[in-house]
Length: 514
Image (cartoon, rainbow, N blue to C red; front, side, top):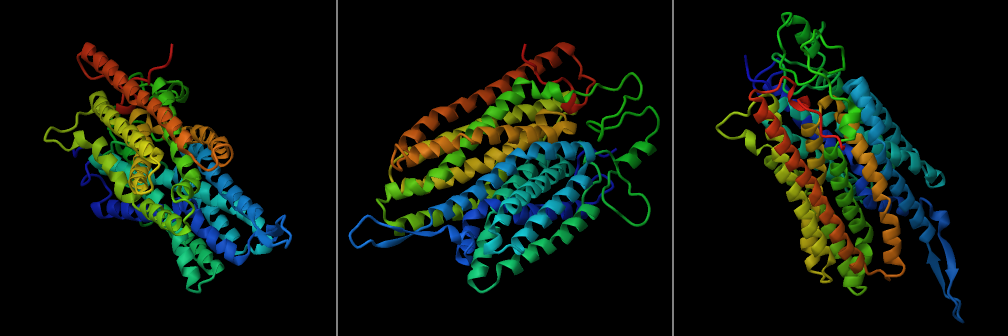
């Protein structure tokens, strides 16, 4: 029998799996996270006069009564559109994760496609008089995009020992998708209308639909893969999917799947119990991982929110220098897709040796041990990035930009990979969504911090940046907790003398606080 998870084995051939991988990478890199290129779209919207009625002339208290334009309310409206859209991007991941886990890939992707198409059409048919349509449009694009990447991350299950690399690669593509609004800005400057470009994005939904039908599973991709696993529609007749494999398997024969695609009653007394979702949520592993994600995400959001006043302060008001450094920062964001797979190499390093990865609980323990280094490296990168951001020297910010994009790509790719490794896959969507939703609530702390920088600190974020270094250091607790959990599980396996009977990701529920 071919080894589960081997790229060459199973019903779906190498060409089909590579087609799924590449098309998913294009999908994530061109559609899923475009809202984070908002600054480029704002340039176009301002030029078209969106919220332009909020620009009122204001008079200075001088004898000549010099009239100056006052567009602060317009800027506040654009900021509010992005704030709501980015918040929805994280917070709505939780209910979307429930939909993915409960109804499977096909239903989740149809919802995502509907939201994405609706969002692009709202932008296409919006006008300066109907600028309010931007609020639902950006929220729909955010939620549709996050649901698309949620369904794509399971593609890593098709490639066995490259699983974590692919998960992190997809998250890196998500980061790099902010370039789409930059492309729209450039095309607009060359004469293409905003409506034409967004109608084209809406038409791309046909491609999403075809990919859903032919290159994605109806439910979920199991890990490790059963023999002869296939997915997607084929010629008339039922595809040789996971369920077909289950029906053809001889009675009483143990299957290689990690967990069933959908919760069902055990067949006989020997089936392993399913770890409850509540047990995962209450575990110290999950709690400290949420803290790990939230603290570093807050650091990144605050850096972006205070970047402009920071550059103005360090450049002493030189607008040319501020523009140069702003462009450099925007360019580095495109490199996320190149940085993210490095974290996957760390997570999958134990699978590339001459000794094959052990199966069962020992293999799951090896995967979890690999996470310790990944989590620690991510925190170290964020600390170095925070230190550079606090240095009040303008050229140092080039180093800050490089460390920021490296840390951000490690953060989101490592978050998804850790949840896929540490917890049962039937709860992945819910746990991923809950972690993102809780981190979104913590990220709301950026607003009082930004107000502090713009108010009492007069645009100088130095003291806030120094405080955030101490905050980020707390995230080192998470890899320590994971290392202790690995030691506990290793002791249990050693005491048992033989591998436990539970499946790899559910051999023992995560530790629950006393």
